[in-house]
Image (cartoon, rainbow, N blue to C red; front, side, top):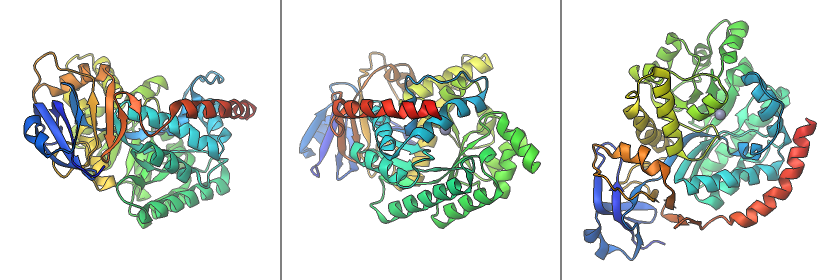
Length: 444
Ligand SMILES: [Zn+2]
């Protein structure tokens, strides 16, 4: 495990600021850290063991900046048709999260974690809700994450929608988790203070969330103006736009993730830029919920960091990046728009955000960075270089399977087989549980 391992005999895509493409390359790592990246033949004598990429693509593990692991149990679940986004919340998500017990929380996390590994996602930022099983929920997800072997920043979504007791329980769970990760080993598990959305937290609860985040030197992870209902609610109750309200509460800053940000005006965009708050774009979810499109070019023009997440729709980041590109083409009616912006979101900003949070250099293959890397079943059959590598990733690698996934030097999947999770066994255990979870859902 601690001996130098060489992942090589493939095309290495380093990404990072001075991204290189090395044909016949390799990545040598030991003790969870990359020692050197270079020519396969030169590194081979220093390796104690070799993982042979057989001509395929070797690249950094991918990063998801917004996930909902618990959403898995909605797979195949029937619910009353929704006519708008609030009804999507009321008819599906706010019933499903209430139906979860603590063991559901564990099992609903395991499957998307397996999909993360299978699609090469080695770091996630998760946002969790289970109003009838709040206490201990993050540590149960933490158990699943440890078993899977990837990196995760977890948070519980604090909200007033379940009364003052529910809000307090969410804050208590957040504090307990943040305390636990602060005292535990660094670099694999992290935490933020989750807030559902401005429209479901009052002044007092929002203030407590900001206070808690400051105490633990972390940021908020909050849905911001995902639908038009959020700004309408804010205007009505507080006579100000959502981002202005968050700014006044001290909720913005470079540690906060503002998720969606679809219905913002120019002043709100300026506030996000001034405070260096990271926006997380989730195009597949936005299209599925028919809530609109976040104006990414306007954000980037102001210098707002824009990261990419999936909102629980998938764990596959290359799939999400393609969706981001296609919706941009569609909305702008310009087939050339947004290619480099999409690459920047997934390969630069996600890496910067994850590096800031986890205290390890992530999303890049270079000496000193974390040994988080994947082999994708893409054998470049057209010329590949640093100039056209994103074309290979979005139009080649994205359509192929990930063969091998390594996180912190641990092999989590080898040649398509998961090493840390017994999916057949877990599927049997989970299928028997979900019958009663769905029965509870139908009665809520
Ligand atoms: Zn979300």
